[in-house]
Length: 179
Image (cartoon, rainbow, N blue to C red; front, side, top):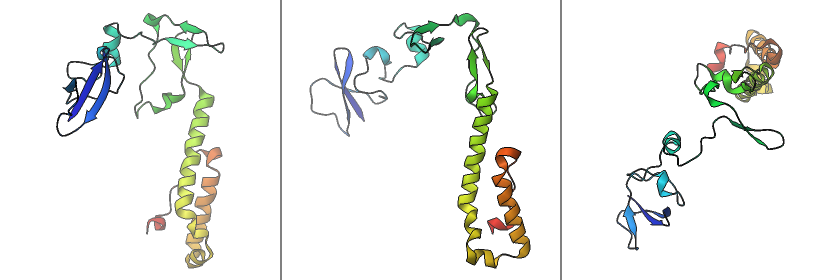
């Protein structure tokens, strides 16, 4: 069970205990999910922190959507009604992670250079993982136990992974790797 204390309209203490602490001003807060120092305005009737949308709609916090800072750290506000909201993170649109906001059109646009760099990074990361698992076949004892066909397959697989930043095609593992 969670218990809190309140001082000056802020949570001043938080206690997790099986029974109510023997302290003055302790309140039972079974659904408490905030932190010490949070203003009471940020909490609902069950002492759970309100969503950002609710806090903005109640005028408790400022809406900073559409604010950006230039290189001189000057704040700029974009006219919000026409802004194109940035896509949310989903598996279908994962590549929007590298999009940038065009401040003239207020639309998110693909940054192809950043996207290519991001994809290259993912390919190199995958290559490293594959090599950690399967470069063991370069060890002399394991290499000696491979058939000529397996040696050829391994060499082609490894070469394909080394060339993956140029080809952009990750190779398939030979079936005998999983044995």
